[in-house]
Image 1 (cartoon, helix red, strand yellow):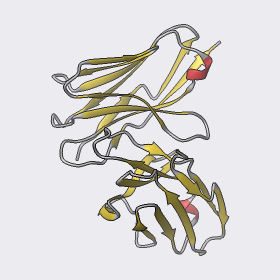
Image 2 (image 1 turned 90 degrees about the horizontal axis):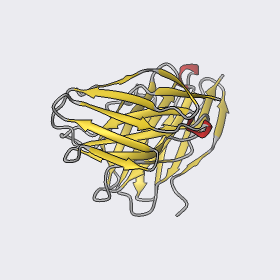
Image 3 (image 1 turned 60 degrees about the vertical axis):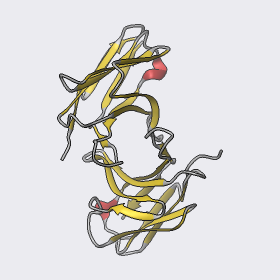
Length: 114
Length: 112
């Protein structure tokens, strides 16, 4: 199993540009989570999906952020327009109900908005 | 909502000594308590977890204890080694939903 795959690993973009982060969960996992990690705020849950349906998006900071999961093997997190305060590491994680509740994280995308 | 307090924020121990990190919570319905290790520049990884019907669980040099009455759980690392240096996060699953609630993390430093 390749684990949770995120792309890109690093993204540097200019303020105002659109950014799209991608995630492929582990096959068979029915939960997918998007997290943001910064030194100041730690690990923040942005949104999570169950069977491709968004369950809780209360952590999405503002309307500039959107997430989709068109099928069981792919999810995107989009920021439009991006701002310098969006700079962080964004992690995707997946898990499977019935196999315990432990998450498997992807390697993360380090986003820098200049 | 549920909150998890993690202490200490930084812990420095001599190589070979033991390290203990403690987390407290308020929701008595919480039923799952994992610990994650995050090395610098890497992803958080699950190292051990415990369910509310168990008081202690061990895996080689690491152990987790749960006191449901006092609402706290702790990570114990014995015979610490340099590779144990990392940030450790506690988390819990509230009874009401599937997401994990995270502690703020403990930076563990192993001194040679």
